Image (cartoon, rainbow, N blue to C red):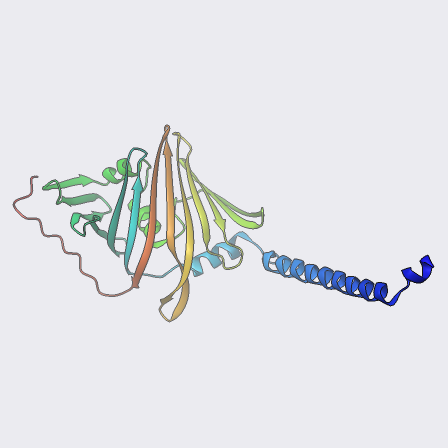
Length: 270
């Protein structure tokens, strides 16, 4: 009697349904696992330092002039300030910035060159001229003019390295550079060879800078669509002090004729 009930049509139907569902579940998991695996596998067959860095460089914009509009959020640990920034660059020559506050009133205008920083502080009613060390004290890190350009353009930061290498670890390509003063470590997105994160560490002082790059979108550069990061987050640590700067870019223009207005009224204190 037990055997007959065990082999009843109802049991057979339920058994076949459960068996079929189990097979479908198993098949779906195999396919999903295979899909994840295939997406995660980078091209390591011909991986060399030169091939990797060439792909990174190929993804960067070949700009002569660059204009971006962005929301900047600056946090020095004691207060947070939000600006709307209009930034224009002429490569290797100048960086022009206009910073506007929450009420839509321009608070400051800067003209930065490789050896000087000129600032019109409209809120304080003063005009200031400093050497480039002013930017280093503001960032709490020994950046150069070239580094500033590369941070804004979302490029690999040039430290004039003496030692370099590249490895594949933790599912990402990682590039190392080193000179007498700095160590640079770059994490590279494996699917498109864009920058994921850059860390600069001072070998002489207790200070480091980390920049993460997100929100990549296509940007037309001389007829070629290049990935351009529209969100960067920078964190600087120095002797227990932490500075944070978020850059949320909403508009980018490449290689257009730009103006850099910087007229200093006589009313500003000098």
